[in-house]
Length: 197
Ligand SMILES: C[S@@+](CC[C@H](N)C(=O)[O-])C[C@H]1O[C@@H](n2cnc3c(N)ncnc32)[C@H](O)[C@@H]1O
Picture 1 (cartoon, helix red, strand yellow):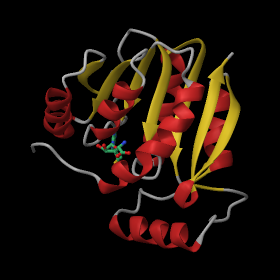
Picture 2 (tube, rainbow, N blue to C red):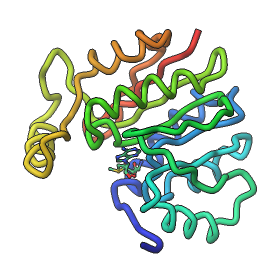
Picture 3 (cartoon, rainbow, N blue to C red):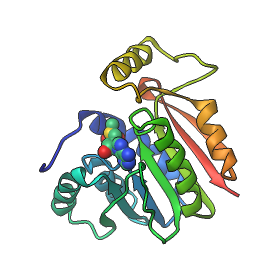
């Protein structure tokens, strides 16, 4: 698989950048879980040159991430690590932040659990876990669009689906992270930010 293009990444990259600029102003190193096409990585690294951005994903996405990286030729994006939440082999290095976009509703719940526990352990003191995507609140969808999206996901694969914000917050809290911010994003998405105390 060569260079892939995600129109969703293209649409959401600016609002995500606006939040990350503030949340990661004091960060230096970021690990991204589920880098996907690689578009986010090169865009965020180009606009936040103070960061060293470490990509990761399943092996099958690496060719696309590498293609975007080669084209962008940035000094602050690191080649993707193989990081599968089914059996995660986390890097031994720790980071100032872990970022992931649109992964919680794609991964099976036990993989989401692995992501939160592993990410928390990879964060330096004061480090932030930033998670972008759609979430439910009080057991309810926040829009008809999200309701339909969830139904389409579950039809595609039973393990997928929009998660409850309270459930992911409980995962984070169990790892010693506290919710710092819950940013409302366009198209009924959220950007949740937890901090390691
Ligand atoms: C909807 S895509 C989002 C990609 C990218 N973050 C974005 O926002 O455009 C979901 C991503 O989750 C990754 N993913 C799915 N299962 C995974 C797993 N078990 N471990 C790590 N990543 C996984 C996929 O490979 C894919 O890159």
